[in-house]
Length: 140
Image 1 (cartoon, rainbow, N blue to C red):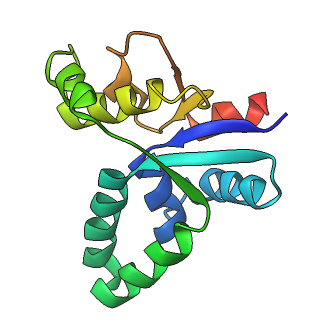
Image 2: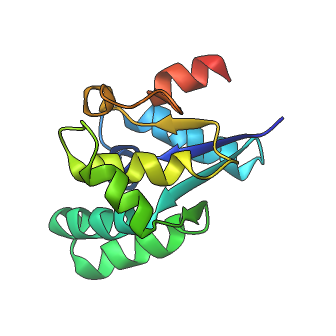
């Protein structure tokens, strides 16, 4: 069975920028996706945020090119007004994290929310399990 994962910005940045020591785990997820062992989702706003951050490290042109490549691996979750309302009404410390979480929750195909920043999701309502790339790879 192929798992479906929502991939948070930190994991995508680990892959794009080869951030040590996290790159090994993020890369393993992308390899598993290329082998059809899992399906990866993210949101449009995460892609835009990742591009903005990556551009600071590798320049705008290269960031744009790596984003085009990474999009080959990712499906995009829809974010609606309802998700925004849930995020702004949640007990999450960071509203953006809440909106990502609720966008993922509403996609019935998604099995896990993958992030290294587990503390950012401590107020998640447990509708969707939030785990690290390392924990997911052990589970897989």
